[in-house]
Length: 177
Image (tube, rainbow, N blue to C red; front, side):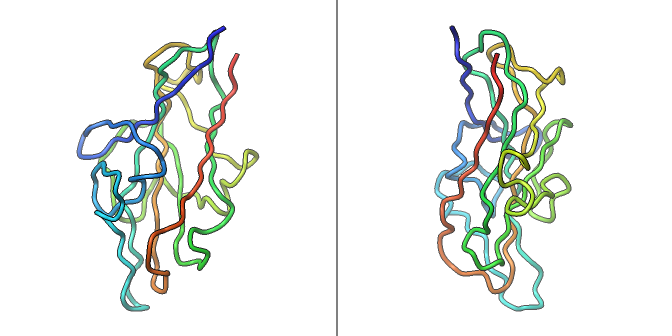
């Protein structure tokens, strides 16, 4: 019996950029479009004035790559996060989304893909974001097959608490046969 295993990959840079193995713990929300496991190197600033616009991290472009094939297939892949704001002050918001359109250069403005608030709309299995599979057959049944990209972005508004954001937990679940 074979159990599926996956590597989490992050792409950064311009088309298509480099793909690095990562954890969602480090290097997820950065003020630069790079792969860096020390978030303090690329902090997202807090707007100084109440009239200043919010600051955004660069989108984090992630996907799963199959490193050990299942007996038959993997499908119904979903991701979700916490049901609370990081920091708890309602001035820092996480957004998530998926795309089957392929990689594009990440932006540090309002994302057109990562548009779902994690804390109110993607916080448990029932509200999780479905992640498709390349090439679109919605199953993974071989090594080196990928999911579609899922994107994460952080919005920081005036009045946010300064300092290191608490660890944010994201869960990924799939059905295996």
